[in-house]
Image (tube, helix red, strand yellow):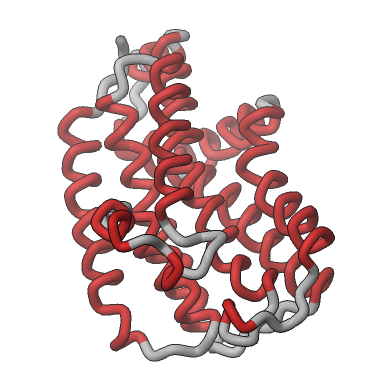
Length: 248
C-alpha cells in the first residue's frame, strides 16, 4: 500500500508537468461547452426534443473526456514512459506490475473525472443545463464508461507501435468516434448509411447511456449499451494484461 501511495503521488506530479495532456483531459471539454453555449445558447429547440443545445450535448461532452483518455492520452503517456526507459527503471525495483497499473489507473481516473465534472458544471452553472435524471444513475454511467475507456487505453497502449503513431492513430479513432456518435447532432438526423458505423463505436454507446441517465430514462432501455461497455472492459483488460510491456 505504501508503494502504491508513493507511486500515485509521483505519477500525479508527473501529469501536472504535462500541460498538453492536462489541457485535453481537464480543460478542453469544459472550454468547448463554454464556447458552444456562448454561440448557440440553451433555448429549447424542437430538434432536440424541446431541450436546449447545451442540455443536448452536455452528456456527450462529458463522454468526450473519457474518449480522449482512452483513445489518446493514456496510451500516449504509457508509450512515452516505455520509450524513455521510465518503465524499465521501475521494473528494476521490487515494484509489482499490479501496483504500477493500479497507481496509473487511479491517476488517470481522477484526472478524467475532474474533466467530466468541470464540463458538467460549466453547462449547469453557466448555461442552466438541468439534469432530470438521478445523480446516482449519472454517476453509475460515468463510472462504467470510465472503467471501459481506461481498459481500452491500456489495450491500445500495448497495440500502438509507438507514441508518435499513437498520437496520429488515436486522434483518427477519436475524431471518427466523435463524428459518428451523434454527440453534436440528434441521432435521429444521422443518415441511414452511417448507422452501422455509428453503432460500431463504443463512444456511441457511452454517449447514449450518459444522455439517457442525464434525462432520467430507465436503465432497461440501455441494456445494449451497458453490455457493450462491460464486454469492452473485459476484453480490453485481458488484452492489456496479456500484452503489457515494461520496455520497447
